[in-house]
Image (cartoon, rainbow, N blue to C red; front, side):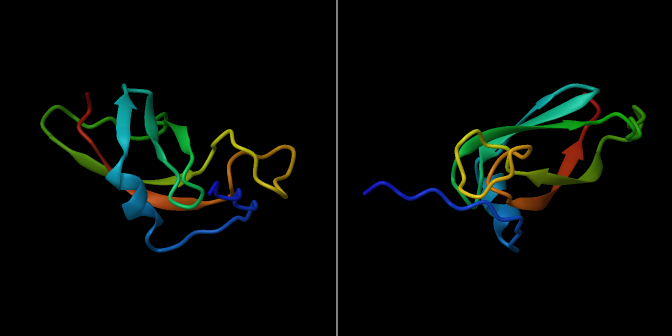
Amino acid sequence: MPRLPQPFEEITRPGYAAVHLAGLRVEGGRHEAVLSGICPRCEHPFQYVHPLTGFRVPRPSRSRDTYSVQVACVCAEEHPGRPDDDEGCGAYWILLLRWDGR
C-alpha cells in the first residue's frame, strides 16, 4: 500500500540525526559539503549542500575538527501545506560532522 505524503511541518525529533547518519554520504571539498541521504521524517532522498565558507580551515598539524551543522529536508517530493517558497517536508536536525581538511 502506497504511503501518503507527510504534510509540511517544521519539526525536529531527537532521533532524526541518528536515522539520517545511518545512510549518509558526504562529499565535497574545501568550500562545501554535499550531504546525500534519506530524510528521517518523510523518507525521501535529498542532497543538502552546506557551505564551509566562514569555517576555519584546519591546519595541517590538526588532523580533525568537528562542526555542528543544521540540516533540513530539501526533498523534491510534494508535501501538502508546504509554502510555495519552501522545500522538503519541514524536518530539520543537527549533525556533528568531522572535517579532516581534505
